[in-house]
Image (tube, rainbow over all chains, first blue to last red; front, side, top):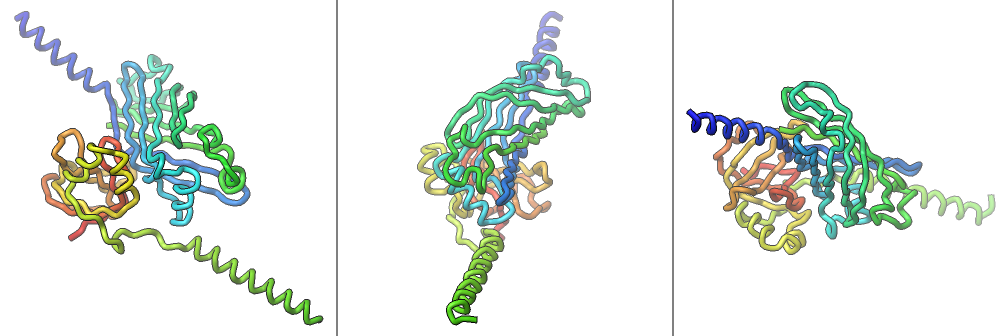
Length: 178
Length: 136
């Protein structure tokens, strides 16, 4: 009997522990830059993200080459001139949702979330805090956030900044987890 | 109208036309299509193995290049936009080649042997191939 309960406890523990790590390989990250000269936007559907509901740890990892631009010229130019994606193929964010305790993963709804962590783009890492929402539906979370970043903070500089590329670009995150 | 003014006007006109043509060609530069490119032929297992051995060297060799990769489909899914994604098995059960297809394909099932041609974006948990098409 004791053994039976021990097994039951173990099984329960393992299944709940499993259900707390959410992940996706096909999250969406896009960016938008606007200057009087031109608007630049790009989107990737290939973002890997993990979210641990117990601790609030969250990671996003993407390949710059997976950004799709509205036209070929813009895509090649962005990869060569400011992302230098041959040299810096990846961008990532590792952080913690600071108000994780106020998010009830068992109850459907939309919860405001604040995340603090380190963003690496173009080989340069910066600490930042961002706001967003976590929506729980049927026990599965989805994360949405929009954060402005200064391109010069990430070593993207030169004549293009302020002309064709804005000083501050908006990064939008939209990830649905399994 | 003086002759000088006429020439200036003509030069100015030519410059505008030439500029417009260059701008037009830049904005209508055709989207890259792997169907028109010759891919580097290899198996999913070989590709994953090369990235695992030396990611920097593999990036230099394959990043942004058309790759024609063959393997066994381990998983078929849709991404958030509804595009079909295929995971091709490698020799390592933890990783594979993750392909996002340009056109949805519902005929491919887990276990099928396929050849996929697409552009290599690098490696996350899996080697990523985008803008991919099925090679018949």
